[in-house]
Amino acid sequence: MSELQPDESKINLFVQGVLGHADFDERVDSQPDINTDQALHIAGRAIALLAPVMGLFTLKFLLYALSMIPYLVLPWMAKIVTDNVLLGQEFGTTEVRYPPFMDPLLDVVQARNHCRLC
Image (cartoon, rainbow, N blue to C red; front, side, top):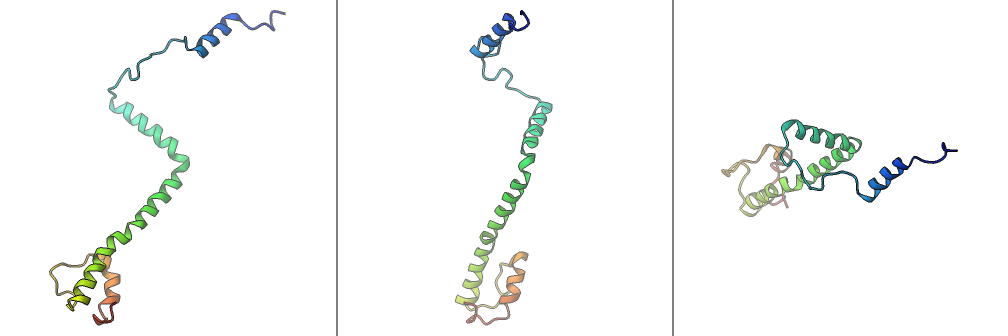
């Protein structure tokens, strides 16, 4: 019948652990300085925790990159309207050159008359 009775020392250890009487360090940060190995270990563990949702992070980055396209193109669109429509200048006569990512748009717009751009 003693087999069914739990061991009192195990119960005491469990109660001490639950009630917070176990031995632990009460200080928040006992070792504030970490070395390179520990930092790499923490970074690796964080990446491992993010591995299941890596597709979501990739999608978020791609959507963010796509959302930046209007901010890259809009100032140059304003330059086209200002120089070629309002001032009536031809393409390539200003000192400021257009960036390479504007080439497809410039190919469409250059052949048109400044009155037909708007």
